[in-house]
Image (cartoon, rainbow, N blue to C red; front, side, top):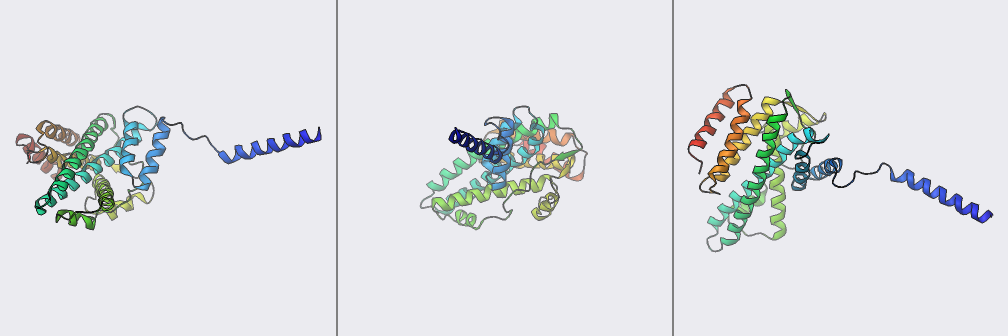
Length: 277
C-alpha cells in the first residue's frame, strides 16, 4: 500500500512539472495564428520567400491578422519581385559577356523572370485589396525592419562579367538579392528610398505608422518599375504590363497630388500607351 501511494505521488509530481514546462499550447498548424507566428519567425531569420508564403495565407482569408498582414505582405512580395528582377538582369548581362557558354546564364534569366512575375502578380493582388479595404490615414507596419543590405552583393558583379559560380555561391547571391529587394522595398514605402539606415531608425521605437500617401506612393512606384518585366524585350506580356500600371494609377488616384505623384502618373500613362521595352 505504501509503495502504491509513493508511485502515485511521483506520477502526480511528474505530471505537474510537465504541465508547468510546456506552457501555452502553440497554434494549430493551418490556423491564422500559426501563419502569423511563422511569418514573424521566417521574416526575422531573413527567409522572405517563406515569409511571403505565410503572409499570402493570411491576406487571402479574413481573420484577426488580415488587416495587419496586408501592408507587410505588399512590401515583402514587392521586394521579392524586385530581387528576382535584378538577378535576371544580371544574368542576362552575364550571358552576353560569356559568349562561349551563355546557356547557364540564360536558364537563370528564364527562371528568375518567372519567379519575379509570380511575386509581382501577388504584389498587385495585395495592393488591389489594400486600396479597397484599408482607408486609415496612417498605415501600420506590423513588423521589424528587414534583415539584409541595400548594397549590391559583390558576387553580382561576377555574374554580370559572365563568371560561373558554384551552386552554393549562387544560392548565397540569390538570398542576398532577395533580402536587398525587401530592404529597398521597405525603405521606399516609408519615404526614404535611398536611405535604408534612415528607414531603420523608424522601426527602433517599435512598429511604425507611415502616412498613407507616402506608403501608397511607394506601392505605385514599385508597380510601375516592375511593369517593365512585361515589356517586349523581357516577358512580352502587354496585358500584365497594363494590369500593373492600372493598379499603380488607381493607387495614385487616391492620394493628394504632388510634384512626385504627377510625374509618376505621367510616366505610367505613357507606358500604357506605348508598352515599355
